[in-house]
Structures are given as structure tokens and as C-alpha cells.
Image (cartoon, rainbow, N blue to C red; front, side, top):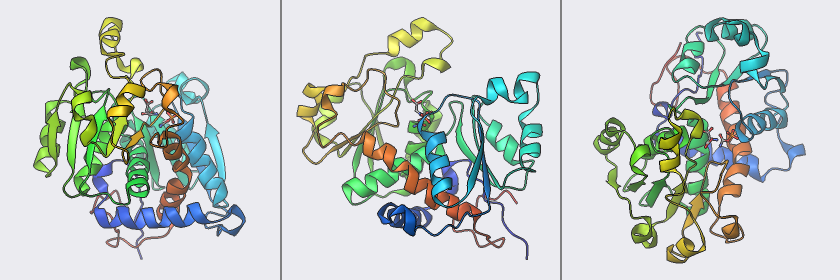
Length: 322
Ligand code: ASP
Ligand code: CP
């Protein structure tokens, strides 16, 4: 029997049925005391290769793997301490790491590089962020958090705010929202970080009702979810352009007054000024709960990735890398 290698490269590979099953499983993990978690990853090794800084993604993947009874080997500063610094290609590094581990999680500054790594190995590769392209597991956490906090994923009014040009988390979430029904999506960005027209068109043709606006205060009362993002300084070649994008939309107490009582504020984090810490104690500020959700969601994902799956039986929408 031939088995499928289950890479996680883009949110495009997930369908609605898979997402809801994953969220149910993540909820089960979240509810279990650690000692009662079945060690489904016992004997397995996860390698984490991070060519860009990270707090949440790397540590929550490592925590998730550890909670499942598995082990972790890590190149935390892969750009400077792995042989990438000597000029080794991502493909060669992946081929070598595939001999040491059963699963590899990669963050890299170049869009498409994680998919390149996945194309040369037969162990699962998980994209932990590739340049300004995608951050699929963050989007899974975001939609899982929406599901938990709002009780549903359909019929919601959601605003994505901030850097919709370079922000891979927001871009992946926007794509993932095409799996929901009756969603109204507002895109709120300074002129230099607007979402590219091609992606906006992709979202519209997939059935999302998308509206671009520069007036966050005006739409705030309509929102169920306000998803704020950081302006991605590391992706700008022109510091003046970066400065022009900063400080335009800040979530503060005044904005919170305009927001409905049931609404939630999300942010993939880290934040650097776009959310006033004064609102942290507001129950609608859900971003630290969102970060915590990273562990159970990634446990559910690791369990799915490691479970043997015969070719043709994947419950995702057919994205294959056999
Ligand atoms: N941590 C997220 C990412 O790596 C968001 C951010 O850095 O602003 O994409
Ligand atoms: N949300 C997120 O990806 O955080 P890190 O960059 O700290 O991993």
C-alpha cells in the first residue's frame, strides 16, 4: 500500500470538512490534562528549521510535539548557524534533515522555498511562514480561534487590518476564509500595504464578499472579528515607505468603544504599537487566547500529518505531493 506524504504548504489544500474535524480534535486536546494525552508521536522526531525569528510558531510546534510524546531537534537561527550560512541550498538541507527526522517545520524568508524543500523529501514538511507568501498554520489557528470565540465560522463580518501586502498571516487567513459561507470581509490598509489586486480578485471569485475601505471607525460597529496585523518592517526596501504605513490604524480604547460587545480582536502577534496594551484587559481582546490555541491546534495537525494515510484517502481537497 502506497502512503501519502502529508505536507502543509498552503491553506489552499484544506477544505471545510477537514477544517471542522481538525478544530474538533484540537478542542479535545485543549480539554485534556497533559498526562491523559495519548503519546501518538512517541518515537518520532520533529526538526524545526527557522531562517527567520519566531517566538510562537517554533515554540508552540515544539510544545505540541512534546505533548504528543515526540522529540524535537532544532536549528533556531538557521540562517546563521546552519550550513545555509556556507551557501547550502534549502533542497540539500531538507534532504539531509529528512534522514534525521520524521517531520520538518520550516520558516524561510523566500516565498516558495518551503515548497521547494518539500518537493525533494518524503517526510512531511510544514510551512511555518515563507516570506510574504503564506503562513498556513497561523491561519488555521486564527479560524480555530474564531470558531471557538464566535461559535461558528459562517455568516461573520471580519476586517483584516494593517499590512495586507506583506503580511503572510493575513493573506493566508483571507484565503482560508473562502471555505466559509456568507462571510463579509473588509480589507483595511494604508495605501502602501493594500492587498494585491490579484488576491482580492481570487477571494471574490471564490465567493467572498470583499470591500476595501480606509475608514476603520465607520465599519467597527458592524464587525464580529477585527484582525489587526503588524506592518512587516523586514519586507520593506524603502524605510520611508515603511514609515508611511505605520501608525495609520491603531486599536485603542476609542476604537473599542465603537466595536460591538460581542466582537473580538485578533492579532497573529508580535505587536509593535498597532494595539494599545491598555485594551489587553478588555474581554474582547482575544489575541493571547489566540496564541495559546496554537498548541492544541498544532497537536491536531501533527497527529494528522504523522498518521499513515493511503494514497487517495486524504481528507483535504486533493492537494498532493506524493
Ligand atoms: N508572526 C507572524 C508572521 O511571522 C506575524 C508577524 O510577524 O507580524 O508572519
Ligand atoms: N504568529 C507568529 O507567527 O509568531 P512568531 O513570528 O513569533 O512565530
